[in-house]
Length: 141
Image (cartoon, rainbow, N blue to C red; front, side, top):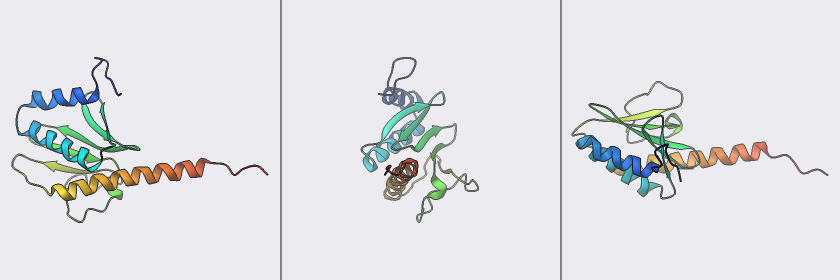
């Protein structure tokens, strides 16, 4: 289990973050977390970079950062994902990441979000399998 210096698990720290926010940002972070878990039951919660909730499976799937006016969900390999619903609305110029910025009162397509999460997991697992295959040496004769 991923534990912090305080001895708390990442899940406990995310619970605390949601509670301490106590406003729409906490509610949105909780909803994002719920959708991520539904889309990828094997996803692991982590707590990185001094307080960022991270969801991983075969690599980072996405992060959930909270700011004064926005909840930012960053997909680590978002540039490689198809986004037919147009959820990505920030960090569109980068070569790797893509972000969904959610402001108070925003609605977004939860089914499309779960599709992005599943696609990100699949991409991570595919990349991991390719790197294992590339790293394996042919058997000696």
